[in-house]
Image 1 (cartoon, rainbow, N blue to C red):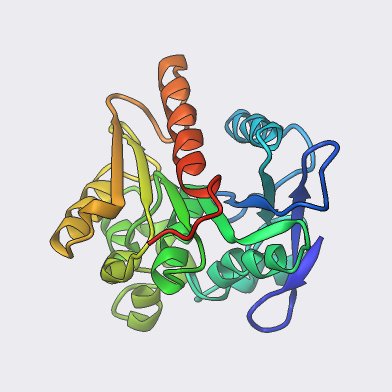
Image 2 (image 1 turned 30 degrees about the vertical axis):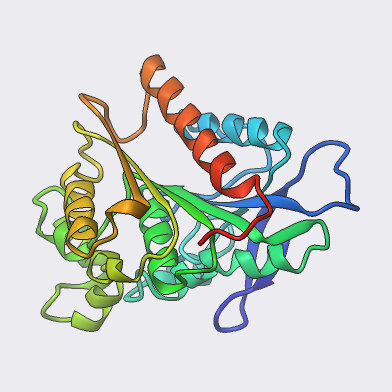
Length: 267
């Protein structure tokens, strides 16, 4: 499917619906935001193991009555050079809007309950999830951030990721406005809906410190009642161990069920 992004460009996305969907009823829906920035979603089993795990989990959510949409926001591969390079010097800008504006498409579907939308993502997708819930505090009823970047200034300062960050948005001195928009950490006081954070302590892709800083800032801003945080000791960026996967996906499913299954409005 396609829908309009912030500048009118058409954002490609995969829409997954349950078999034998009852289109006469309104169902809860979830936006899944892929990570890496340069990756893409597939309409089938992903060649990367970590994304295949998420794909299978989404198939399970479909069986539970959810609808899932996976946008390929600008920066994603597979749609030509212009779309791939559209993120240059604009991380957390139009690319993030491309992602959270999937909610607009969902709300236009007659079989989706626009008041029961969830959003979640891994890594870069977790970063966009944090932007969504701080830029649009009431758009989604619940959100899950899995090992997402909380602040790109922190990512720039990390010795393993400074060069990658500079190649996309330069330095904080060169582009302070871009770094400001790429810092959901600085806007967590705007959070209004429940947020679940999952992170492994041995993560080298997005250091565990990002979630520690995020949780600490949420507590400082009086948002602790909206936040749940699960630490996985010794786990890496892509969860791999069986007991971690079991806990994480049960936790995510229970979280979405608690906040999206009921048609009543969340306070």
